[in-house]
Every structure is written in C-alpha cells, then in structure tokens.
Length: 137
Image 1 (spheres, helix red, strand yellow):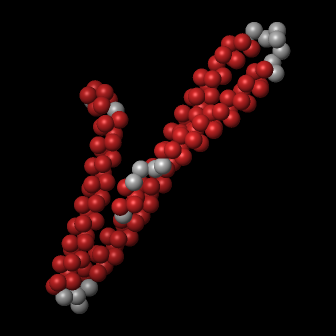
Image 2: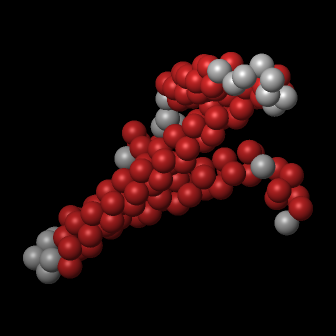
C-alpha cells in the first residue's frame, strides 16, 4: 500500500492548470475583442481577462486535486477492506496452526497501523495547510 501514500505528480497538475487558464484566457480575449468599440464594458473586460484566466486555472487545479484525492481515498478503502476481509477469513479458519495465526494477526495489526498512519498524515496535511482555521476553532 506504500504506493498509495505518494502525493500526486504536481508538475503535471500545474501544467494542465496553466494550459486550461491560458486556453480560457485566449478564448475570453477573442470574445472581448469581438465586442464593438462603442461597448463601454470592453476595456474593463479586457483588463479582467488575465485575472479570470488565472482564477479558471486555479479552479481547474483545485478540481483535479479533489478528484485525485477522492479516487485515491476510494482505492485505499477498497484495497484495505479486501485485505482486512482476507485476513479475517483466514483467522476464522480453525485448521491453521498457532504460528500461522500469529502471523495473520500481525499482518492485520500492520494493516491497521498503515491505515492509522494514513489518517494521521491526512490530519497533519490539513493542519499544516490551514493553521489559522485550526486556531479559530
């Protein structure tokens, strides 16, 4: 399960966010440029295009991170549930010897420790990302 604990590739995410922002910025610039000169909103809109472009890129990046986190969490839960079920089924077998039973119990404890570590890492990430929110609570 160690491969699940690695963070997503930030370089790829930043690149796609930049591309999304740049693409939207280009489209917005074309749209605003096509407005008639008499339109009083043309200049303010043209000045806002870079800000809107950056915000759209940031929104895209946030969406990618949230989807990635959700998929990773779902995969982790699925794998952990299957592993726990396999270990518990094996422990219920009355025909296994004591040494094998101890090894299975050790593996189950190891699984529980990995899951606890994963939760603690998530908690640590949240606390380091938003220290002011924790202080207010």
